[in-house]
Length: 118
Image (cartoon, rainbow, N blue to C red):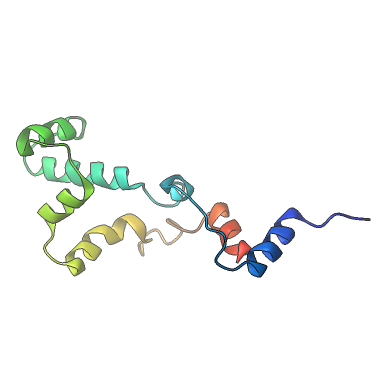
């Protein structure tokens, strides 16, 4: 007798026990598709530094000296934007494909596998 595909067995278990399971995933699961939060933070700090003539390799150190603290995602966004709409506009290019590169930032095999469990 043939065995069931383990993914099918898992799908039945998940459906029969709705709400009993959760996936604990880190940003690495999406890293092949979109940048991590750290990557976004570093890019934003580099962009801020560039307005002051600071090169990318010195941007984090410059930020620490300029603002007296480690750069934090929420703090940097607060410095650059005032509304949630502004945040969306600032962050959109990091997470959505552009008209020039429509194949960028698409779901990966990991995303499809997770969706397949549903």
